[in-house]
Image (cartoon, rainbow, N blue to C red; front, side, top):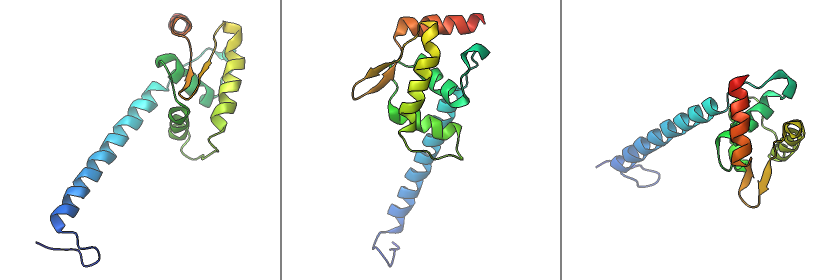
Length: 132
């Protein structure tokens, strides 16, 4: 058995850890792809949503509750060249709330968990988008 001269770990352990790391990296890539697919939605021009706002609204319409971390991760995946402060999510939620209010849509804050659009409102919005 071969051991690393710096940390006394055998080569079999190093190989097993490398395989685990590779599997986790593949899993992360798959999850990013799913998240990216979920956030591609087309909204009518009258809503005047920015690409980031459209991404957020897409996630909120398709999930029961979306955490701030999920929204931030989706933002980073949508705009990989930007690394804003995580507080940008709160600002963007505020802007989306304002833009969807005329459509009788609301975004609720679920304390300690994230944000949600009530299911009935989300269903109506998705139906409206399919009809458009």
